[in-house]
Amino acid sequence: MPSLLDPDRLCVVLISTRNPLNIGAVARAMCNFGFHRLRVVHPYQLAFREARSAVGASAVLAHAEEFQSVADAVADCTLVVGATAIGHRQPQHPVKFLKDGAASILQELHTPAADRSRVAILFGSEKFGLSNDDLSHCHWLMHIPTSEEQPSMNLGHAVAVCLYEIARETAVPSRSPEMPPASAQEAERVTALLIETLRASEYIGAKSNGPREEIIRLMVRRMRLSSDDASTWLGILRQILWKLRTKN
Image 1: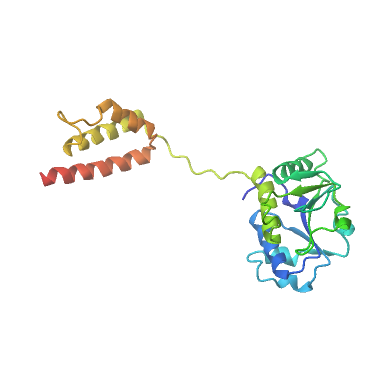
Image 2: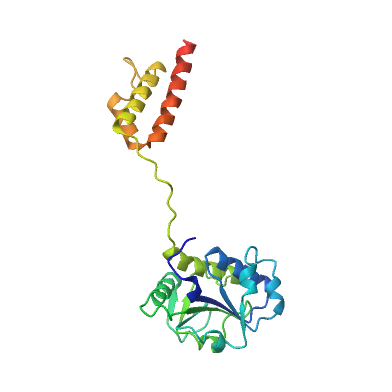
């Protein structure tokens, strides 16, 4: 996914993650959306760098930075955002839904001081989420709207959803090669051969209630055929017309 955003300016910070497979899933999600700066704060198991779930993302795990505290992990960041399900808490921070949160993150990264701007998104442990101490390092919180029946998300899924929302706003769409449109003359050839074929099949004729010729012409124009497509349709119609005539 080509992007106008420098991915080095966004850090995913995992705090007290318990399952190495979840860290691997996070690394894979980061690769999916073009991010690679992963930071972990006292993970539950140190074997996370070998997680089998990091399909195609072994480099992200290999270069993941380990920290002993959240303060150290976000020391070089100008904006720290906590991703949380909120639950029964009464948050002491401003809370933004994912779409607005992603827009605010992008605004921070595109400020005139962008050369120094770096954003950290914090994700807590699978069991407890972000602690009050973790939250104290955040400027504001970002919430993914989920159903009340199951408000919490798998860690890898939560990271993927957040990064997708950020990446999609900066993605450069890949352009398909543009095909030259059919000229009016080419479109008229298709129209004439289509009408001839319809007459041969008796779909239209003197006693038929089929569409008038001008209706068919308008229909062909609405198709906005490319020049190559017009050539293909001419070949198709010629074959159909030949088959119809050889049967009679």
